[in-house]
Image 1 (cartoon, rainbow, N blue to C red):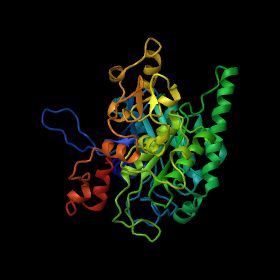
Image 2: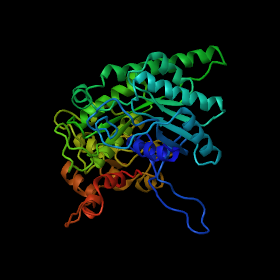
Image 3: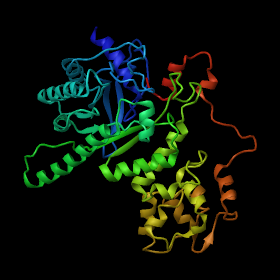
Image 4: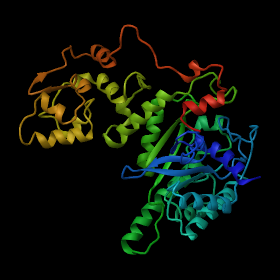
Length: 430
């Protein structure tokens, strides 16, 4: 099989991995123009300093021995199959890098022949890249079930590794991916965490100690393929951040492409808004000091999709509002809808000079169209309505009398796109 054909197959197969997102553009060069926008392979991620970097995103192989119900690469699915050789991946990566198309590599794989065999091929690839002086960023997928020594070896060549937890509970894993075991996923996560800690300690004593996964580890889970509510998903994420010092948990809205009694109907729309709310809540866990049990509980196990999670929490806890901005401490301020981390810091700094009034908050970047219902300035409330959840929710939604919902690409073009193409478009992938 020609390498270009392999590239088409394996870059397309990588689109369901959401650890970084693809541009999805396809555009041929015009006369006198400069370059094409290609469907395959180039996606974007963000470095720790906020810089957007382009990554060459591919699967090493989509020839999988497993039969996970939700996966397009499962053994029983009738799709074109391909497997790169390490030399082919190295050649493609080096050539793209030299042409300044990419700044790094995102390499994942189906389980080809066995977890150890697949992991050895991935290690050989990244080792060859480093031996060829490739100094770009590498994000590698760890293969659950691979031997510990292989996971450790891989960590010496790449910047970041991720082991996908796949589904929010062990019961769902058994139902939809019975060949994968919770232990085989958790074990490499723990190994990676311990390796990173040990490496930091060794670096303090020995300056020439080689780096081990300097960009840490991430994971990914599917939302909507199984019945777990948002509360269970958030508690799982919270545990992963605490237990494995995870850099990121990625959420992937389930896109139905298979008819199966164990999966939602193929007519089910991908829960993209729910995915978005989970990302917002995840941000609150990591940077705003919330915990999962504060945001949701057994009476409210799912977010209100109409509200962002911080507004949802504030309306559920309206008894603690309004807060006086000239007295509330930093941790209280960042919990007010419309006040972010930067504006809270500015408020704390500015009020050392003098008390702030309502106009001052505008200058500091506070989003007053939300915040004004939850604060007072110099003792005065500017919300203009009574402080109760129903009234505030109505004005926050700012819903006109003739309320309409966001258009869906499936509704707009029910016959012009086949399901797979529509799914690709709606996710912004290839």
